[in-house]
Image (cartoon, rainbow, N blue to C red):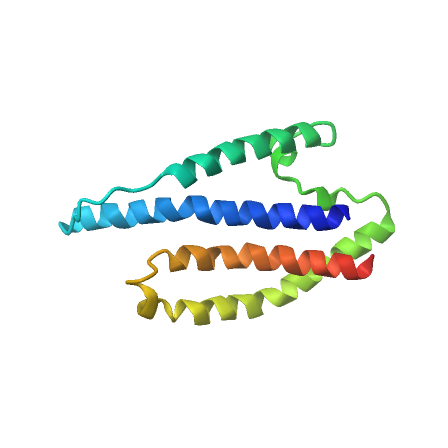
Length: 154
């Protein structure tokens, strides 16, 4: 049950990140239009970015406190996934098998993303943040493959 919650929280955080980065992408496009001299005078909504930053600060604080006892280095305290704190040999084998599956599926996922990127010229006018969403398919696919592999082994 814990594994399922960790999976859903990770996917939810990635979706929130995508939601938070879309205004940043729109802002970059707006700045590019201003530099080109094609300014339309529209405003950028930064509310999702601010909400995302507050959530990141909270999650980072929780991760730091949770990992403070396990690791001595600051970066390891923040970024070491809980999946890599194995207790025994069986968990190490399951983790190694899941990481191997993720590694083997990455060329397939990358090919799918490249194909979907080819559709961008047709969607550029109606959905300008399409590349940003495609960027987030990669980590969501990695997390999904990892957790499905671990779930099948338990």
